[in-house]
Length: 94
Figure 1 (cartoon, rainbow, N blue to C red):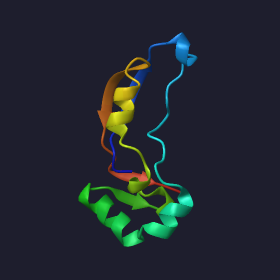
Figure 2 (tube, rainbow, N blue to C red):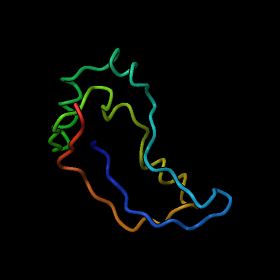
Figure 3 (tube, rainbow, N blue to C red):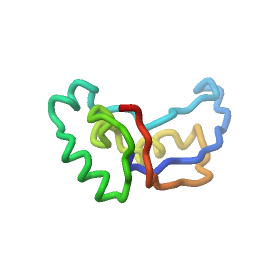
């Protein structure tokens, strides 16, 4: 929710089945988030990045995800980055 989004164009690499990741991926399970993070810390993280959250639960905390910059660097053979954006409003279910 705080990491930039990337607008990409696939390179059509046949070794990856002409595919690429669709997100950063998790480093923490949903239950681990609920057991080790707090809602107040998540809201502080969002506030520090100027992000307004509508809905959302602790298991979607930004701390639950891999570093998107590293993920994008690792798939440089799969996609061309056309642009990025910084989220300001995030809408999640409950």
